[in-house]
Length: 336
Image 1 (cartoon, rainbow, N blue to C red):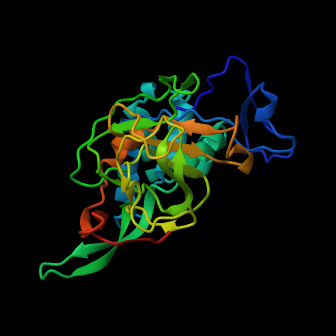
Image 2: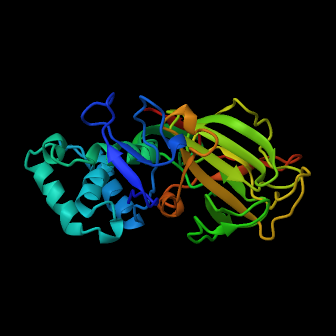
Image 3: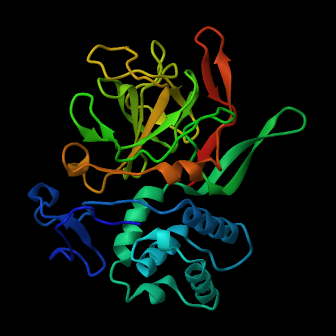
């Protein structure tokens, strides 16, 4: 679901926008820039069920000889228009009917031409999920102990916790936090053991690395298309990051970037002030550079995204006995 949480809001076409470009915004002046029509707010609440069903249809169609290829983001945007953006009202019948229409020769353009908010939902969901499914090449082990690369189409984003490492979580987005000042929690806490290897969900560039009094040792990675900023916080004391990681570094999806810890809530660096070891994982959407910092930031609830990414985990091994650093076991290439 994408919805506005403000009491007073508007949904309109900008004078400079095309007929398919929409703005979602509230009354606050700092949310709107003159002559700009980028999206101002997204409340991402697509259920795991909807993510699962649409992704399977997308992947199966692309791995078959069928001439009809589904796009899961298009399917989700269509369903959002049908259910008013409330995926708690998701009906399998709506999805089945849509697939039957596409199989019968209808196009998404034809089916959505009278859906006023389809373009908004499609752009919003693309900003969240645009790097999750596509073409990639992954290293595969052979029986003789060697490896080879195979080109595939499927899920190419990874769970932020390495394969075979346990964690627990619940939907804590929006929960109250009081350290420093009263605020809401803008991520998902994944509870686990100190030292658990942390994985880059998506390929991108390291924009921030170092100490933050709230997040402790943290890493911020911007996706290659610039739409997503991934925030990994409360990393391990003394050795938070994988050896050699630095700002500006290019990261592949599935790479080890650091280690789970409990640092933060301190103006002094390298202090454990978090009660329970966990990874704070967050995703920020950026439609315009004015949204990078400040009151215009858009953070989304990633709980169901974490559940979805359990489907794809990165195998790791210890590659340095001295530093105890880990590395991914099988290399990955993004082909899109």
